[in-house]
Length: 92
Image (cartoon, rainbow, N blue to C red; front, side):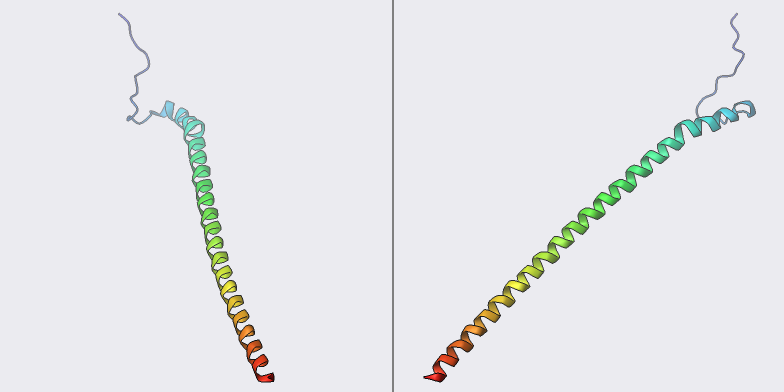
């Protein structure tokens, strides 16, 4: 007969005292790097999203300022021409 000296441990079973040290090494070797990797990926994705939002917002503000500047320039140019016409008519 074949006998197995070490008991077979399923994944949902708690490790026995002699195997607890192996569990800590498993956490340090597998779980901690995965946690760090996903944390770095999540923070990087957040920073990319935030920077894209700021680029979009700056574009919106720049377009608004350009529109306001153009409207102001047209209005002041129109007022200048109107005043110039008035001056020409008054001198005659």
